[in-house]
Length: 144
Image 1 (cartoon, helix red, strand yellow):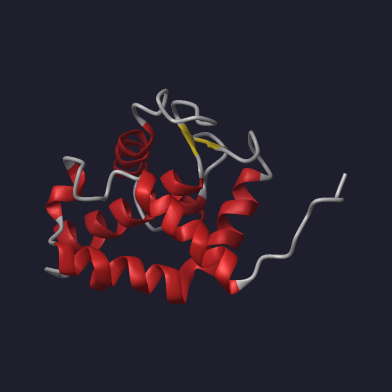
Image 2: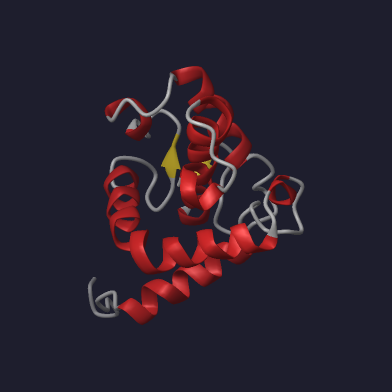
């Protein structure tokens, strides 16, 4: 069962980040990604890759293990409410935005978060809370 398991290394985690960044809707080729200038996006990606990927990985695994592993369903993902980071309506909207149109991506399901959707959702929630509603921040990496 565990024959092919290999421990995560910094190099492997950073490689996973780079792979995920190519798939999500925060890149410049997607409508949502056009909200960020290239400098802001690059700072955000670097910050996630260098500082936050390990804790984000742990959070993702925690919720995925209670859902349809390696995916996280809406009903099982209580991170925002567990930590009182967002009201349920805003969270539902952002969850749906992050997971819609996933039928074209292998290994994904609509209304389920894969690892790259999870990262995208965290960015969408940071944007909602700190860039749009809360203390005004003009840069997404600062909001995150």
